[in-house]
Image (cartoon, helix red, strand yellow):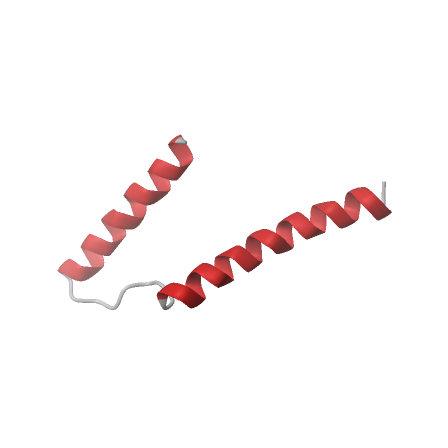
Length: 56
């Protein structure tokens, strides 16, 4: 839970700083960004699953 709150706080801080300096936010569009992050997570899980099932 601490990791989630730290990540959220850091994200909010970065968003405020970038907005303060009128810079574009360093994030992809909302839906495609969420889908991309979910895909990366699933890829990591699939990698470990494949290693456990076929190479151990």
